[in-house]
Length: 374
Image (cartoon, rainbow, N blue to C red; front, top):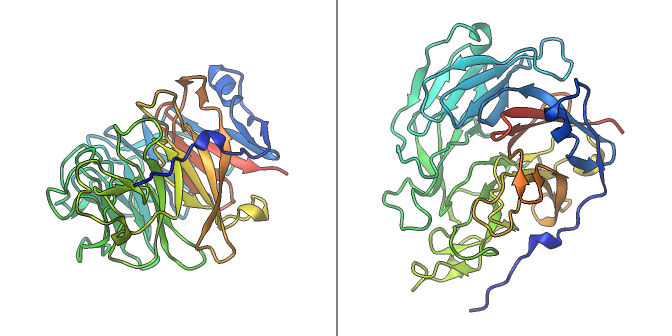
């Protein structure tokens, strides 16, 4: 069986320019000046001191909520709408890696490794350390691939993935290596997609409402295999190959025996190998130029054991007019990796109502704002 090699180092970057937002000169601003963006775009700090910042969500009043891989959840209000958080509020502490956050009808949902919580009417109680209700308390407690990314879909169901508790292994229980959905009250849990090793980012097409998600490939098959994946799951019940095949055509050396890769859904797009593609978003705002609308932006957290580090950037996947086929993959923002040293690792994106995009960074403990000035 021949395996196709994908070498993303040949990616053609967009025409780039470097710019930073306003603020006092500091080492942090000096680092920010290293970020390269397409001409007309600027990047600035929305908030600093947000330890281990991960998933982002925004309330109807504009308050941004930040999950973490630590034990805290933060709230970042921007009351004067100047593009910077007024303060960093610790909303909750003592949680079990509360990576996932989502807002519905004024309530904040938070996903720990082992359960989903709900903070009711959260905007009115930011500094009160509100007590949450437990929406669903029976998620696996395995830490390996245990960070939960959550979001409400067009069907008003809460989508919750459960990653594989290993590098590559047969699922020890049916819920592992899946994307699941439940009603807002935690009832009706069902599996939507199977064979998903570890997704920490998904979104729905604004054109046809299909679910798209990133998935991280297995380790220990070399620097260039397998590629990370961008997948499209238009219907429930599809199987995306784990643990038998990766990136559509890379067999697991042991577990693929007796299996046919044609049985499983192929990725919509291969991404870079080991780039750790995470919290993707469709760009649905109006601020960026028209060519970005309904296209996919992907933060690539960065490789951890590749001989030459790869990722530590944001890439752009362009789709065809129907929004069903990925036709391009290029760099949108880079500079968090300098040589082989990183000073930041982008995790998750959030499109704000004004059309700018927030980016969380769990290495630099920050949230950035990317805007387009023209």
